Amino acid sequence: MKIMIFDQGHPVTEQLLTKAIEVFGTPESGTCEIVLARCIGKAHETAADQLQKTVAEERPDVLLMGATALGEEIAPAMGIRLGTGVAAHCVDMELRYDGEVVFLIPAFGGRVIGEIMIPDVQPGRPAIATVKPDIFSADAALVSEINENNRLRVIDLEPAGEHRGFQLTGRQPRPRAAVDIGKAELILCGGAGLGSPETWQRLENLAKALGGAAGCTRPVVDAGWGPDESSMIGTSGRSVRPKVYIGFGISGAAHHLCGIKDADVIISINKDKKADIFNASDHKGVFNAEDVLSALEEEIGL
Amino acid sequence: MVILVLVKPVPDPEKYNEIQIDPQTKRILRQDAAAVLDPASKCALEEALRIKSEVEAASGDARCEVIALSMAPQTNRDKILECLAMGADAGYLLSDPAFGGADTYATSYVLAEGAKAILAAEELDAFDLIIAGNESADGATSHVPVQVAEWLGLPHLARVCELQIQREGAEGQEGAGGTPVIAATKKTEEMLLTFRCEEPALVAVTRDINKPRHISAMGIVKARKKPLTIWTNDDLKLDEAKIGAAGSPTKAGELMTPDLSRGGRDLTEEDGSAADAAKAILALLRKEGLGA
Ligand SMILES: Cc1cc2nc3c(=O)[nH]c(=O)nc-3n(C[C@H](O)[C@H](O)[C@H](O)COP(=O)(O)OP(=O)(O)OC[C@H]3O[C@@H](n4cnc5c(N)ncnc54)[C@H](O)[C@@H]3O)c2cc1C
Image 1: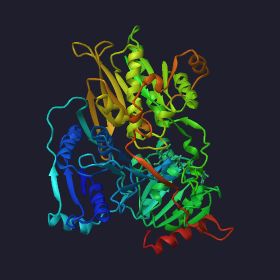
Image 2 (image 1 turned 135 degrees about the vertical axis):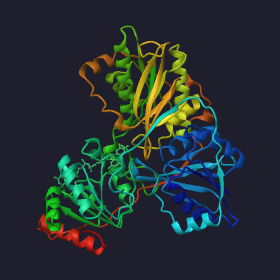
Image 3 (image 1 turned 180 degrees about the vertical axis):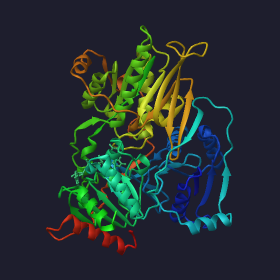
Image 4 (image 1 turned 90 degrees about the horizontal axis):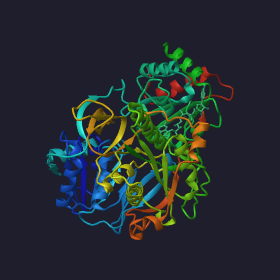
């Protein structure tokens, strides 16, 4: 079985590689071959054309890529061009005894997880799957050992020349949050129940004072209280795995819960004792979020 | 100018926490959540309507027609009416039991064929622009817009958070005439990328691009007089092997609802104060080696 991973120079590649080895076997196990199709710093507008060519030459059975802005543009395009199915945003995958690959994908904001099979695959018409960053964790030691010993074949995609359609005219870095929630061990997360941009600011300051990062739900982004989607946790935001997550004024919609389910400890504060987030928490407190924020500020002398 | 907007009815996203799976059949138990227009579809339509009013304001006789297209069961006719009430000029609903059970591959095929059939019916050469929501609330794959563009052989750009139509006259100056040029900003993990496209294309917009307008009473009245066409496969005449479940390369297996329950113990005694809760939180942080 040949597994191709589209490598766009994003940390998700190492996460995919770790998972692929776990599911399909090491590159030398004889059961599978894993190859990286690398497209870093080359014209992204033509990445789909480049990958299509490489797939035709290499004839993989499975094509995996990160569900990044680039991957989400390329994976569905590959599906149509190669006449095959694409499993979106896999949260797990499994190789059955009969050789069929089963992908688990979320629907309804993560409330439902469904099995997806792509039965009619052939070499060159691979099963395609995308995986969001940080859904799988990378085994850093394994990945660096593999790289150092050149255990993987890496195919550098050839930049295609002229192309029609969208032409890149400018690029500008997005502002970054002070602390990246993807790496934080402690996340204080604010929801609509914070009520105001001022309270959000207090949550952000408190997170900083406690050595953690501030995350949020969608209404906080939509209301323009400060953070952008890079701090939003959930289906259309980030998946996080801190040691401790503390939610303030968050109802616990499936769209949000699916992003926090891998936290070691979940603590939540909500004034409504029936809030859905309580059942998904280890520890809960039925309080006004602001009161608990004030008490925390006082305790740590903020 | 003609803009096609792809819209999708979805079960109300506010109700997803209530979805249950039948343990025997492994299917979703009676999904009676009312359908609503997908939030991102509304943003796509809003964007088209904004462009329409800009184009029409720029010159008295410039026309910009906005056509809404959806593939959904006939019970969703009112969602197309909603698009017309928001301001779309015409609506098309592709409804046939044979379209059901489709994955994104077969869905995008039917939508692309529907788009071609609209061109034929309206005697148009091409749409100047197709706009879709980047991801729907239910499946949220973000595949369908890109795949429709691929079927139609059009350039596509997803995750668009800013969109402008520039009209460049023969001398390159902006004006009402000339070819429309699409200027779009795509948001990636780290960058804002700006693109230009000088030919018809599809863009998939994210929900931060705008705040969709509310429907006015006047909009509702006007909607009833606008053309709403429902096509079945008798009209489209698509090969049954390429549509619905038969035309879908992916097959769905069992469904489950992940068990996220963790017990939810109280932080404090029954009538504990917020200060007690704060102390309990800090104690839990210390236990994990965290906190100031
Ligand atoms: C396609 C799609 C994708 C989405 N993706 C995401 C996503 O990635 N991430 C995300 O978070 N959401 C996402 N959502 C939105 C999601 O469905 C919910 O609407 C959202 O998570 C709710 O955020 P919330 O809990 O902050 O607000 P609400 O649901 O409004 O809850 C606010 C809570 O605060 C409590 N509260 C109010 N006042 C106080 C107070 N003074 N003190 C304490 N508690 C108080 C209330 O009891 C309530 O439980 C998405 C939706 C769609 C349709």
